[in-house]
Structures are given as C-alpha cells and as structure tokens.
Length: 244
Length: 248
Image (cartoon, chains in turn cyan, green):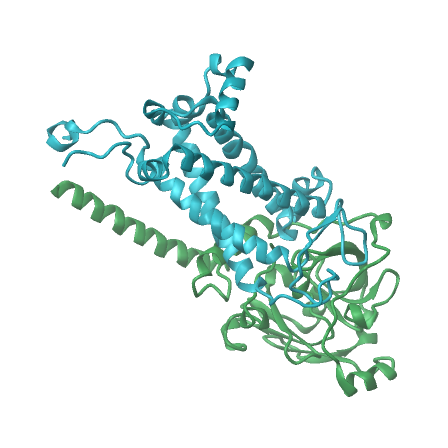
C-alpha cells in the first residue's frame, strides 16, 4: 500500500518520527503550564525547608527573594501578590497528568521501536574523555553545526536528553507525588526515603531549576543551529524544504 | 481509503463507547468528584479517581512524639464575632454539633457528650496548600463513632460539614468520613485545642490538605446528593476556585 504512493517514494526519510514530534510539543505545553502554575504556587510560600515540616515559625534552608501571595509570610516586601493558587493548582495537576501520560507513551514506544537505542544511546567511542571534551569545547564556542549533523544528535545532546528523560522527569514526578498526603498514605516510602515531605518540596523545586536550565540551553542550542530549520524539523519532521 | 475511514470510524466509536462505559463505572464506584465539570474537570477526575482507588483504606503517616512541632503555625481566620466570644466565655458548654440528613436519629451533641465517646489520638502532619506544615497530636472522637450513633442510611455518599464561620463548609466522601483516622478533634498536643487551631471542635481529615480540616465545626449533614449543596460543586472551596478533593 505504502509503496504505491508516488509522493512518499520521492521524499527523504523523516528526521523526527511523528511520535517524537507530537510528544515533543505536547510535553512543551504541559511543561510550560506546570512551570507557570508552579511559580504561582511557590510564591504563596517562597520559603524552603529540609526534613518533614516547616512553616514561618521554623528556620529555612533558603528563601527566594520575592514577595509572597500570602500576608502571613514575612518576605521583607511591603505588599502581597494576588492569590492565584486555586486555578494554578487545578492546572498544575491537570498538566501533570498530560505530562505523565504522554511521557509513558513516549517511553514505551521509544523502547519498542528502538528510538532510544538508535537516536539517544551514545556510542562508546563518543563517550571517551577526549571526544566529550572536544564536543564540549565546540558547544562553548557556539559553533554552528554542519548541515549533515542535523540528521543525528551528538554525544552531549544524547547524554543531556537521556538525563532529562530518565532522571529529571521521573524524579520531579516522584517528588511531586511525595508531597501528596493521600498518595504517601498508600506509599509512605515514597516520601520517607527523601527525608520528609518538606525535603520532597525542596527537591521538587531544585529539579524544576535543573529542567529550566536544560530548557534554556536547549533553546539557545536550537538558535545556534538555526532556529527556523530546527523548529520546522520538529514540526514537519523534515530537515530541508521539499520540492513540490 | 475506504477501509481506513471505516477503521477510523470503528476505533472512534469504540473509543467513545469505552469512555462512556468508563464514566458510568467511575460514577458507580464513586470516582467522580463534585467539581468534575469545567476545563480542569478531566485532571481533577483523574486525580480523585486514581487516589481513591489507591488509598481507600490506606492510613496517613503517623509520627513519634519527638516529631511533634514545637512551633506549630495556624493561618489567621476572619474575626469570629461576639456570639463566638460569648460561647468561649462559657467554656463552650453551649457548643452543639448538629447531625442530620440521611440518618435514622438526627440530633445534636454537646462537646462533653462527644468526649464521653471513646477518644483516640493521632500524631500526624497537617499541610497547607500554600506549602507549609507542622506535626501535632490530635485527640478526639472518631467521626465514624458519631455516624454509627445516629445511624447512617446505606445510600449515603457524602458528609457535609459546616464551620461557625458562615463561608466555610466542606464535604468528604464516605471513604474519608468512615476512615479510622478521621476525628472530631477537641485536643491538641495533650491540651485543649486552641481557638487559633480550630478549637473547640475541628474535623481532622488526615489524608487531605489543611483546608479540608474545617475549624469550629457546628453541623454535619449526611447526603446521597452532594449537588444539592451550595452551587453543587461539593463545598465552598471549588466555589472559591480551589479543588474539592485536596489529597494532593
């Protein structure tokens, strides 16, 4: 059936499969919503603690120097931000569901169709210290990659994506669940091994910072490599303009 | 093309039918929260259904005595007014808990009557949706004991509870109402429950965030139709934009 389609025979293979493209943009929507609503939630109490409990009467691990959306929280500012926690919490958890469900589909299909092995697992040669150092130096110089490099990820990219997919996202979901009084009633070890509910909250924030850092580097690297062509590739799947 | 369209039609139809069956089953097993409408309904329903399945009988974490917070914190409440002050002057001897709705023997209880029922204590954490928390020992009468005394009808699905503060009312499903750790607390850390922390009577729902633990509880209503109360969203929280279910 596919072979009989004359249009498809002429086209070069896709740079990104439809699975990668669809999950990429759904994750983008979920992540941006989680980030913005997370910021709204955190300003209601921009203080962080370690251990099980913490409140305005207990010492902090650190504070974010922003005004709070609650008058009871001493922040040194003379005013209180408007309370946005209601819809922020609703949207935060709805976006979390989107992220988890899309993430599960992506990971399951990625294992089944060889996406991780083929596209993200770096080769042993690329992992040698010399090779990694060379790649790192090229990134620091913001060298624009050659056209043929658009067809595959380099070793540093692969490592970064693997860390995000298999470490940061699972950890941020875990620490999020570890804050839920109901979830930990069923799975107490989820919070106990983290050192307590406030530790889970602090780790959740630290993981957010790590993911934001990844997002910034990711966007900067896309711009260095060519924002239009790389973004178009993630939307259409194709690297170059197709002759009509 | 034809076969593809037909296949699409069949999968879409099967998907829609599957969703309808799932919704029917979820409703039957009490997995749809009262605030399931609106744009955040899907996420809220998934959260409530998943947690209800996972936590129907689970117990909130309890802590040892040395975990009790030496400096607990309570959010300020709006002024309670002259009538509350009068009741307080009288040592809350006139405080009544009204119980009605789908019960065989509606009536009211004084604080002393509640205390004469078997008491239990739990050292648990209370978390505010804002992010702060503390651990305290809560002592009181299990809500299930009170519900047993008045005789709850089998078709009951929710318990509505109201505060002395007119704008604060909540409801919980029967899994939380009959839960062994859900208590009508009159004591905290070995003493009387201070007014700032909800005294003389606070319904402590241990597996949910602080705003479900209503302070100054004055009445309970057992119901099989939560939609009849307020705007039909389950409690005052969703009317103010906050989720009815606060397990996360």
